[in-house]
Image 1: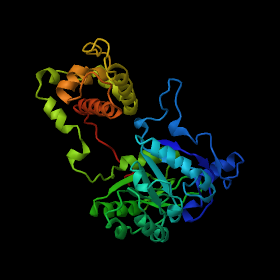
Image 2: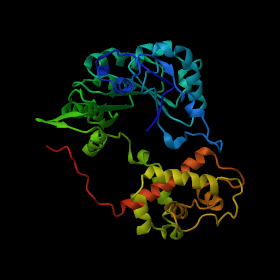
Image 3: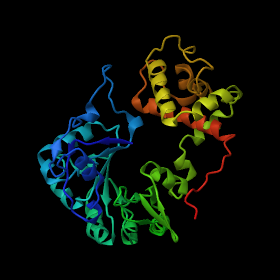
Length: 375
């Protein structure tokens, strides 16, 4: 999860702000949380490394904006257009703007039409029924391409069906409250919101339990480091898409499976062990760098021999999906030789490689998922 805080500092405006983590953290360092100031990361999305590559790439998506402030807070009015400009410039990044100040949306519009920002999702926070009924009608009225709802901290059961039925909401996220003074989050509230999302075919994500989590008649006190993991183990997220939409690489992999040469490649046990000991995001980063360096140039050195057939799971996957040379990319994927690969093409190849690796790992991955929240 990548966070971009172009400014820091906020003011409490509703019940959900009562035990805000940012205020707790600032207090520990003697900082005034009500003072809104620019940060050293103001230009983060356009900052570059020494090799002139962007510090943030598509692998870092989504980028969460202003988690230690509010994007629409009044003090940031003089700086906001510069941030809109950065967001518009980095169209390859996906930005999520989470706000309790949706009422200020129309006062804080960019110079370009907000519809020119398809890489922005406006996420409205509502922690109880009062804030839901106050903020969500405004969210539905704003001229944004992508809209989501977040109940965090979720303080009571919330009816959002009238808003989900609009077809404007793409996803809903729920979570409890952290900290020593955290208020209770009830599993029944979470499940009720999930059922509403399922009825309206809206994506649902249970992000974290919070510190005090009630399930049935039992109250669990959960350490901060375990709150997201416990929510994940509940395994109640809902993805309202078809299998084809969920896995855009399925068709091409079925097509490639007709080739005896490519189906002869499998991921050996030592390579599977290598993958399982690492975060798959790290493997994906390695795939991105290997493909960018060895496959993306217009005329790769020794094309056809630049990708070994062993030594790294990405190398094996490249042969299995016909992405080991520019010649094979042209033959099997209709990606022309003699020119540099575009960023979109690199992303496509990385995604295909990673999907093949995941399928190889899944062939003997039969370990059941336990629900540690069982009563």
